[in-house]
Amino acid sequence: MATLNHEIYCRRKALLHLSGVLAAIAVVALCHSTGCHRPAAPQSGPQPPAAGDRSAGAAAVRVRLQLNWFPEVEHGGYYTAVLEGFFAKEGLDVQILPGSANTPVPQLVDSGRVELGVTNADQILLAADAGARLVALFAALQSSPRCVLVHQESPIHSWEDFRNVTLAVSSSATFLKYLTSRLPLENVQIVAYSGNVAAFVANPHYAQQGYVFSEPFLAEKMGARPRILMVSDLGYDPYTSVLVAQESWLSEHPQLAERLVRACRRGWQEYLNNPQPTNRYILSVNPELPADVAQYGASAIRPLCLPEGLGADQLGTMTRARWEKLAQQMKEIGLLKNVDIQRVAWPPALRPDSPAGSASAD
Image (cartoon, rainbow, N blue to C red; front, top):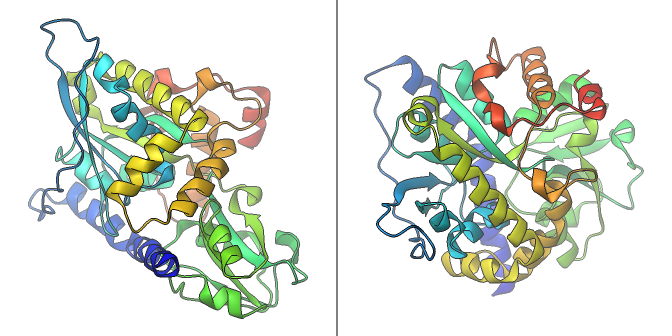
């Protein structure tokens, strides 16, 4: 049964990658056509607990938070904020809506179908370039989990060695465009990502995309010895699991963003320190996620959320330099035309660019 769950889990991941282009097209259609067909309303998710210490008589603000995928560890802190009552203590009644392989989060948020969404920074920029008015409030993962798996037995030890291999990757992945612009990819045959690690395990001359907290673990369980090349080491490092809202909705609720961010930060702090209770809930609503993958992922995700030098009180904050660097990279590879970073990132969520952060924007 565990092997079957792993297979189902990987195939679902593949569907998400293959649906990226369709989701982007949906965003463009929404932004440029007032008569576009809207997707069906998302299914209801778990309800938050009662607000334990909310002021008597104060009505909770009800909001829907749309995930970009089925419940997994990259959403752990948001679920913890519901389960531990952190949202409720801020006067928020947050309903988390699970995503699926083709959930167009930017479209749903920009259209007002949901108040909040979770997506990645490059998807926010793509939507903004198409005319969406979205604002990033909180970046749960400071570093992207995107990686490429190669075999330890191969001569590939770094990106500089990346040649003479078959690479399985989704053609819709933005990081692939960046990869091909930075590396010569000598004798690299790019094939479609199948959605599981079986081909990688069977072929020592094979490489494939993955998330650092899932596919490497699955490959090891099947007997392979993967070496991990992080895409962020090439310089392409979008914030991941970013909480996003519609600009006009924030204008109508000027005090809400601060409360949301405070609850999210508490949720992620608690999840990183004690993920087991939330993981049990995630497994109950996503039974196809193997328990050992969730356990491994909760450990592997911590340095992505809290890299060295970032204090727990800064968890989720962003820098303008990082946003500007990402936008410039996406322009250089032809994915963006013009995006106003001033409108995309919520100013209170931006910490001052440190010397190290400024240098990374070069």
